[in-house]
Length: 389
Image (cartoon, rainbow, N blue to C red; front, side, top):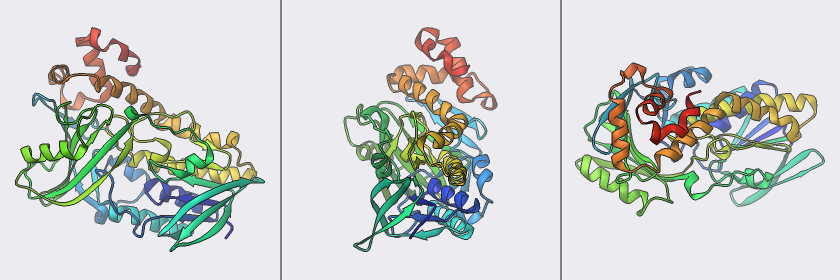
């Protein structure tokens, strides 16, 4: 029961970390608390094509739909169309996470990682440069020993707390989410759809991600500090108004961190990836692409640390450098933009969206939108000028 690395959580970040570690010749254990990897689905399942193709060979079995862009709707109904390239790293493919997550875990196992399910991490003790991880399976507890623990255990990460990594979330740094898988609804299947406004989703937005055959993930994220009702009540109202004839076949709920870039995702013998490290996009809430990138970097740094015999926080900060240089700065910028957006009333938001209608779809990116908006509304948005540098 001795390993080089124990990875807690078999989502995209955890499986990518385990796969990378195994490919680097490490002895790896991947632990998943649920009976089935990939279930229940807790996200809209969108990811950019380039981000996915960077790490895995595309298998049509885990692709539910392919979209060409995104449509964004202002509170007054103003519609903006973004191309796939400009829409962010959640637009391109819509996954079938129940298949995709298992595929990634199988790739980790094929690379040499041991994978166990229905097993929870219930404790962790560091001593003499090693870590003892206490696990519980079918009511029985046992321990495994390792040099490094990679925590990919989601927004409520226990590993982060045990390691003393500060990932505290305030009320305005988290989105409460509910999502329905719906069938029999009418929408343009070539696009992902996003609705903004305080009336329909205070501090967040409503999304629709096509799943094929007139089916889609229809969900909502709201900020608890701004919402007067539960996210389900807001979503039910939206669905009744727009898709009242549709049928709900699956319901999931959860939370998404929108904290932005944290100071560090490491401690002695420990690294965090994905939602555990607050790697979700503060604007969209999407996190699959960043989790996979983080898992890959964590795996590489784990191999370097074990080869050098140095698993200290000081050495593991190489991992911080990698993910911060890749997407960390983007998280910080988007957090600042998100904080600005959530303070706007619906009339102001609609006015800004109408301004963006002047741009061509192929020219609209987050950076380009900010640039145009600051130019047309300098008094309102001048404090965002550093986001376009």
